[in-house]
Image (cartoon, rainbow, N blue to C red; front, side, top):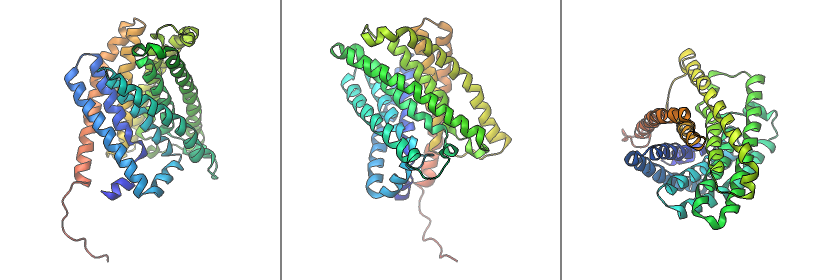
Length: 347
């Protein structure tokens, strides 16, 4: 158990993100009972992972610090920001605006701090060059974290009319930064693919976050468009609405490419399909795409897009259930197996 804590992946809050976003999708469509089950998984997973990360910081500070300095793993810490806001957004659907506001405050502060610390420690402070060789799909979580703050701010805006202007500024600020961060991360990842050989082992599940970041940008944009009149919203409503459609189109275009990449990795090159924490990096983008379709379809009166989202929900549920099942089997086989007696002496 202690070894598991020592090697805990910084991106494991993707479990919270994935469970929360599928719960949101189900709640939007009126499937209350399964949505509440996934909300329970999301909330309990959040508390457990937060406790494990604190324990890791206390008992294995060196491992914790190494992750901050590793560009291949450091950006995984942004899953804490996104997971915090996704949980808050889901709670707002049950009228828990106080919890949503508190979690948004925590997520926003964490996003600001990590937004300066992680790029510095993991990228700029490294003496080894070029750093581009280590760019991967986890870098897009930086953009996802920004957009999660935008969605949370736009979500609670109707319930807090006295803070309407401030929330509009937060939502548009985070949405705009998220768009630029996505473009920057996309350039770095594209350069890594073009300048260095991409082996099948390198094409890991977090590359799905490239699609998820576009999908959450759609949701954030649609929520901003639906906000009440405020100076910041009025000045950018048309721009945000247009870019939201562009982001949805690009997210849709990415899905076949990501599926083909998975086939190339596991079937063409026989990379074993074994569970690890990065599987949750697929669940969130798939669920987020369903929510993006539903939100954009309702906001812009696009029944075809909304219909795609209604079907895609079940794809997201299947992906979540598969990942959760394999995670439970993995935990049973590693953490909860019975001992078989003393280990034999080394030869």
